[in-house]
Length: 294
Image (tube, rainbow, N blue to C red; front, side, top):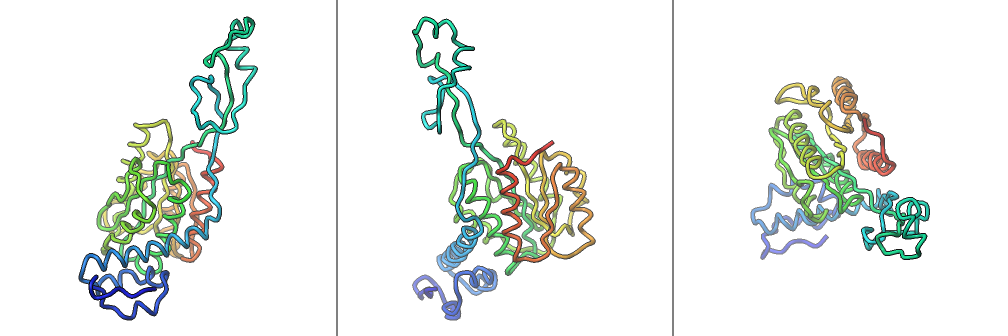
């Protein structure tokens, strides 16, 4: 890693001893020692690139989900994939035009594949228990979703003392920019899980009001809360709620299971930090397969 020069305010020669991932893991430690905004931005950039690199390794090749649709030739999108004439629909919808041999574009029906949009809302614990390697690996998990669904409505909420919306579903930004925002969230002392779910639910409603997509919500948390009320009363309001339960703490597992059950989803236990990105990839694969929702 190239050291920052004095012009940009970098004054930590030890950084030259670390690779990009090591810097991402120690992001908050190094962040405290930087004074100038440009140096902080470069630190975020290096860390974000390392996190994205890890996410790409987890994903491998990215495949875009598609679904089969039918439309007449005049209304079908120009980018329709694998289109072919649907003779049955053409006969059924335009029998007279077909008999006369006077077919127009609007009379010819085709079947084609179109990108199947996927909406995902991520609600992420960024309290003090989420610093260091846990924060970096959580960043990789977020990046896995962002890279898999780059053009879909993805919302991101971070919560500690209170919830902060890092990305609204309709916002279009690069994955690296979102990871930099994520790294910039200060780690506070309390965990307001209730506020994190309330903010996620608002994004879910926003997606449902602007499209016919029913979003999936993924909660990344150890299941413990130190502020607010028991959030289980909110779970049934989600169309599909998946919980990635981090850590080996068993006392909080019952709450995670209750949230997932009421939210029509499932719990994935992630006892080891290193398996968090692959656990998120498992969630992504479920979504790509059209995981059933109530």
